[in-house]
Image (tube, rainbow, N blue to C red; front, side):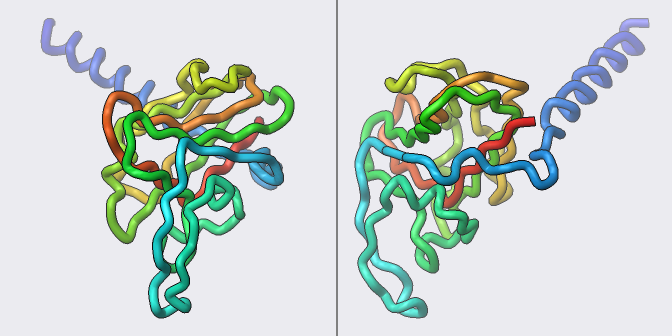
Length: 177
């Protein structure tokens, strides 16, 4: 009896996890992250690959909302902070919106593990101290989809709490249902 009950509890847990992670952007829905304003805690300067000219670029916050989902930061610049304690990136949509889905393109040419443990927050506070939509735990794929289930806010932020790290985001998309 105990084994059967344990089986059903696990089955239910997996079903809930599968449902919670199955949200997706509405087809043809507008990306609320464009065109708006983005900021971050600092800006790292690095060189692109010689294949694309080798120019030195700034990993400014707006690189994460430029519409380019390239996950190789040396082929197309991503937003990139310096190595620092609790780095953050923040989107200001200028008005409160109902947020259902946030899609993040993580860097894949190296360093994808840096994003592990990052908190994605949604709310009306400009100090990044908003409710958590989700925490990034699976960095095995370049595209990370978080379901915010109708959270309301003007700001979307990505924060790596409690450690020194670089924060790199190749693209951030925000959708309402």
